[in-house]
Length: 324
Ligand SMILES: *[C@@H]1O[C@H](CO)[C@@H](O)[C@H](O)[C@H]1NC(C)=O
Ligand SMILES: *[C@@H]1O[C@H](CO)[C@@H](O)[C@H](O)[C@H]1NC(C)=O
Ligand SMILES: *[C@@H]1O[C@H](CO)[C@@H](O)[C@H](O)[C@H]1NC(C)=O
Ligand SMILES: *[C@@H]1O[C@H](CO)[C@@H](O)[C@H](O)[C@H]1NC(C)=O
Ligand SMILES: *[C@@H]1O[C@H](CO)[C@@H](O)[C@H](O)[C@H]1NC(C)=O
Image (cartoon, rainbow, N blue to C red; front, side, top):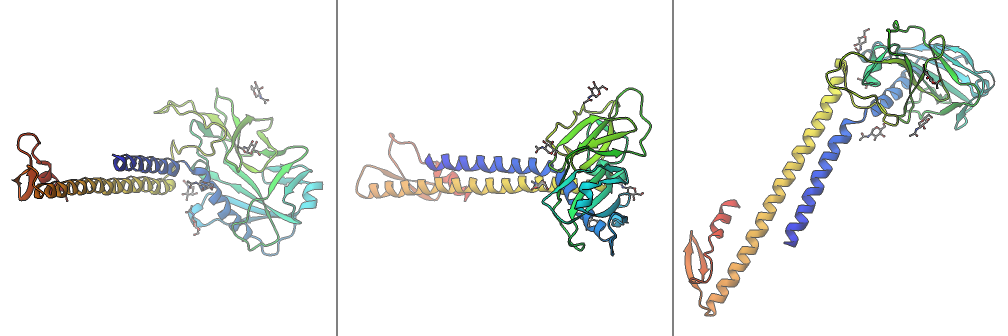
């Protein structure tokens, strides 16, 4: 019974673990967005040959990401702090922006995700009125570097303004909202100020959305703050189905693996039972040899002891033979 008990515990643990794997594999769209950030940093840096400070260099993206626009601007961090940047694409950066850790020069990478916005920043229950724009800061000391960590920049005085230029005509009814996706996965909604402007004190990704009034097939709630990305629902463009597919395979794999383990453990349990039975049998046979009043009978092809009347016939032995 002790063996069976611990095996059951083991099985439950395995089952729990495989379902946990399935859940985590399905809920990681922030991971995709961070991988995109890293890729775009690399491509933005490739636009620099011998960059002059304070000049915007437009970069090229790989063909599998056509529709995304990127730029890079190299700055002295002292100049960023004391002057800011009057206009960098849609971003207006006031003086007083500080970076952490301190670097002498930094690069501000600009991203316009265009028609890829909904792929990397799915927001169930909302419609994007503008593309998702990103502003991220990196160390400029090595312009060949890949996978650079993002510097932490924050506005210490006035906020950074994002002046959206091409907004889809605002529909009647729902009020447009600014949405900010911070790098830690937090999603924050705020009011749009005059002139289609949003504000932020941190780097991240920004856009303007309205709540979708279209009758959705299933009611979807907005992503609560703290859950970056959220589940991938709504009209996901085809480019993303491959990733979803691999997640499905991960899930199927875990389930199949779990089942295989279950079967193996089941066999183990049966073997243990049979082993125990055999031991008992040997014990009984030995007892019979020393002359106790046990009568040997034939069950199947096996010799088995059976006590007349008082004991149950050992029929289980034949059943066990079939299994192994
Ligand atoms: C999810 O994405 C985050 C951010 O990239 C990463 O740190 C984490 O390991 C990922 N989790 C899984 C289960 O893939
Ligand atoms: C796009 O292509 C680049 C280079 O060919 C590759 O590194 C990257 O992983 C691809 N990205 C996606 C999202 O397919
Ligand atoms: C975005 O548009 C470009 C063409 O402008 C296309 O090649 C690309 O596949 C589109 N991306 C998505 C996610 O639909
Ligand atoms: C994530 O970052 C934003 C902006 O810096 C901040 O307001 C928020 O509290 C952070 N959330 C978490 C969970 O760290
Ligand atoms: C945002 O706008 C709504 C109504 O338009 C108003 O009630 C609310 O106080 C505003 N929030 C902020 C933070 O200004």
